[in-house]
Length: 450
Image (cartoon, rainbow, N blue to C red; front, side, top):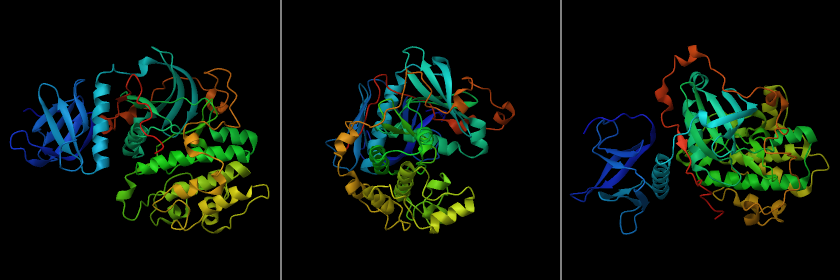
């Protein structure tokens, strides 16, 4: 069997496969690449022992009549049924989902920048910008995030960007922005995302000064469900802030930007120690580099709630050293108009000792959802968006960009040309596996509240 090109690797890892002849179970290195699933004797081998075609007729599901734990079967009609075991129940499910999404994607036409009309600029960041685009064939509007490969490579952000794309693929939830397509050119990466035309909460808070308690309570509840969902996927968000929370035209929120997520956090025995995030929202344990886990997201929620109710974060200074000292030591104070139940929950979210902070136990979000502040809510109704928001953004038409900062919207929407001298120094191989196309019918919401 000839050596294959390992470009466009979608997923890889060790699995245990049942032999076709001797029926013995052996550990093999599996790689999903293109429309094939290859398996090797060892991870470093270049020639596969076999290949499973992921055509439209191939199916993958949990194996029902196999005694070995965490097994699934991949059936190739007319060839054979492969019995394979994951390292855990979660690992098995991820492989099945990846196989099925690969089968769906392989049957869809390729998507590129040529399939979209650029309407306007919505925002800009260090590595690129976000623009409103319209898909030419069906007229659907999306937010297109474009990132300069050169800037990512120089800043050593390639791996984190690929992780962001993977989280977009895994995470499907009413209060999270969804990824529909991802593709690339020689110079840039492109992600086609949900377009939330209500703009950022940051834009609205700056405009209004502060929000009502009723409004904050619903936003907070929806954020709790989104974070709870990510935590169940073993993901820490790490960048909760007003700029990353968008409003849809119906008044409900969508969290965006997974650029700082930490995946597989449970594998870190003492948590992770990477300092990242927006300073005003960083938990004390992040600043102290003592190792942190999912509870940093609950600290950020406390900061966010305070900021929405008061108009400023609880700890603030333009001097970073002063800001850090305030986060670590300054007593928490509230204006008299902050309601008592909101005050109590925020105090518990902003407990400096992460082990004592609400949401820090194995129950994660349960104590937060059970707090009296949320007693008026039926959580299933919150999940289904059956709670009517007290505020809906003013939107005249789908292309109305008045809820976005004019600093960006006044720019001309276009695909700008990056610095070619920078591009010449990076390897395209680093971006293998970035391309993704959603099923025509949409992946839908893959997870329920339960």
